[in-house]
Image 1 (tube, rainbow, N blue to C red):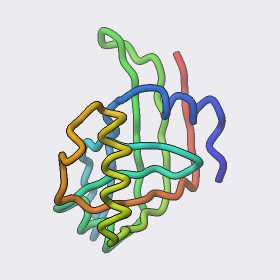
Image 2: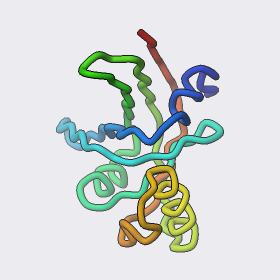
Image 3: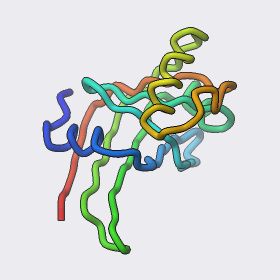
Length: 127
Protein backbone atom coordinates (compact mmCIF):
# COMPACT_ATOMS: atom_id res chain seq x y z
CA UNK A 1 0.00 0.00 0.00
CA UNK A 2 1.25 3.44 -0.79
CA UNK A 3 1.10 5.91 2.08
CA UNK A 4 -0.26 9.26 0.86
CA UNK A 5 2.65 11.62 0.18
CA UNK A 6 1.43 14.19 2.73
CA UNK A 7 1.21 11.51 5.44
CA UNK A 8 4.68 10.23 4.50
CA UNK A 9 6.13 13.72 4.86
CA UNK A 10 4.52 14.07 8.29
CA UNK A 11 5.91 10.70 9.43
CA UNK A 12 9.40 11.67 8.25
CA UNK A 13 9.26 15.25 9.56
CA UNK A 14 10.52 15.09 13.13
CA UNK A 15 11.36 12.78 16.02
CA UNK A 16 7.94 12.18 17.53
CA UNK A 17 6.88 9.26 19.70
CA UNK A 18 4.62 6.69 18.08
CA UNK A 19 2.26 4.34 19.87
CA UNK A 20 2.39 0.74 18.75
CA UNK A 21 -0.67 -1.44 19.31
CA UNK A 22 -0.44 -5.22 19.37
CA UNK A 23 -3.05 -7.79 20.35
CA UNK A 24 -2.84 -11.39 21.51
CA UNK A 25 -5.77 -13.50 22.72
CA UNK A 26 -8.08 -10.50 22.44
CA UNK A 27 -5.92 -8.47 24.83
CA UNK A 28 -4.62 -5.22 23.32
CA UNK A 29 -1.28 -3.77 24.35
CA UNK A 30 -0.24 -0.23 23.44
CA UNK A 31 3.23 1.14 24.09
CA UNK A 32 5.32 4.12 22.96
CA UNK A 33 8.15 3.48 20.50
CA UNK A 34 10.69 5.36 18.47
CA UNK A 35 10.33 4.67 14.77
CA UNK A 36 11.69 5.41 11.34
CA UNK A 37 9.50 5.57 8.24
CA UNK A 38 10.89 5.25 4.71
CA UNK A 39 9.44 3.94 1.44
CA UNK A 40 6.26 2.47 2.91
CA UNK A 41 8.03 0.60 5.72
CA UNK A 42 8.22 1.46 9.41
CA UNK A 43 11.18 0.22 11.39
CA UNK A 44 11.21 -0.10 15.17
CA UNK A 45 13.53 -1.94 17.53
CA UNK A 46 11.86 -3.49 20.52
CA UNK A 47 11.90 -6.25 23.09
CA UNK A 48 9.70 -7.71 25.82
CA UNK A 49 5.95 -7.95 25.54
CA UNK A 50 5.71 -5.95 22.29
CA UNK A 51 8.12 -8.31 20.55
CA UNK A 52 6.45 -11.43 21.97
CA UNK A 53 3.03 -10.18 20.85
CA UNK A 54 4.30 -9.42 17.34
CA UNK A 55 5.79 -12.91 17.06
CA UNK A 56 2.39 -14.38 17.95
CA UNK A 57 0.21 -11.96 15.95
CA UNK A 58 1.94 -9.74 13.36
CA UNK A 59 -1.09 -7.49 12.78
CA UNK A 60 -0.26 -4.12 14.35
CA UNK A 61 -1.34 -0.49 14.42
CA UNK A 62 0.86 2.56 14.81
CA UNK A 63 -0.33 6.04 15.71
CA UNK A 64 1.75 9.22 15.50
CA UNK A 65 0.45 12.62 16.57
CA UNK A 66 1.96 16.12 16.70
CA UNK A 67 0.62 18.50 19.34
CA UNK A 68 1.41 22.08 20.25
CA UNK A 69 0.33 23.32 23.68
CA UNK A 70 -2.25 20.55 23.95
CA UNK A 71 -3.72 21.13 20.49
CA UNK A 72 -3.39 18.51 17.79
CA UNK A 73 -1.65 19.73 14.65
CA UNK A 74 -1.78 16.42 12.77
CA UNK A 75 -2.14 12.67 13.24
CA UNK A 76 -1.31 9.59 11.18
CA UNK A 77 -2.62 6.10 11.84
CA UNK A 78 -1.09 3.07 10.13
CA UNK A 79 -2.28 -0.53 10.04
CA UNK A 80 0.16 -3.16 8.91
CA UNK A 81 1.88 -6.50 9.16
CA UNK A 82 5.03 -6.73 11.24
CA UNK A 83 8.00 -8.95 10.48
CA UNK A 84 10.59 -9.73 13.12
CA UNK A 85 14.10 -9.57 11.68
CA UNK A 86 16.36 -11.82 13.76
CA UNK A 87 19.58 -10.58 12.18
CA UNK A 88 22.12 -8.79 14.37
CA UNK A 89 23.69 -6.76 11.56
CA UNK A 90 20.34 -5.56 10.17
CA UNK A 91 19.13 -4.74 13.68
CA UNK A 92 22.29 -2.74 14.44
CA UNK A 93 21.94 -0.77 11.19
CA UNK A 94 18.25 -0.03 11.87
CA UNK A 95 19.01 0.95 15.46
CA UNK A 96 21.60 3.46 14.17
CA UNK A 97 19.07 4.92 11.71
CA UNK A 98 16.37 5.24 14.37
CA UNK A 99 18.70 6.60 17.07
CA UNK A 100 20.07 9.14 14.58
CA UNK A 101 16.53 10.45 14.04
CA UNK A 102 16.11 10.91 17.80
CA UNK A 103 19.66 12.18 18.36
CA UNK A 104 20.32 9.28 20.74
CA UNK A 105 23.41 7.25 21.54
CA UNK A 106 24.05 4.82 18.69
CA UNK A 107 24.26 1.94 21.16
CA UNK A 108 21.05 2.75 23.01
CA UNK A 109 18.68 -0.23 23.08
CA UNK A 110 21.41 -2.62 21.97
CA UNK A 111 19.41 -5.63 23.21
CA UNK A 112 16.35 -4.87 21.09
CA UNK A 113 15.27 -6.70 17.93
CA UNK A 114 14.37 -5.13 14.59
CA UNK A 115 10.74 -5.19 13.50
CA UNK A 116 9.67 -3.98 10.06
CA UNK A 117 6.06 -3.03 9.52
CA UNK A 118 4.66 -3.26 5.99
CA UNK A 119 1.84 -0.70 5.79
CA UNK A 120 -1.53 -2.05 4.70
CA UNK A 121 -3.56 1.13 5.21
CA UNK A 122 -2.92 4.69 6.29
CA UNK A 123 -5.13 7.55 7.36
CA UNK A 124 -4.17 11.06 8.39
CA UNK A 125 -5.67 14.35 9.42
CA UNK A 126 -4.21 17.83 9.67
CA UNK A 127 -5.79 20.58 11.74
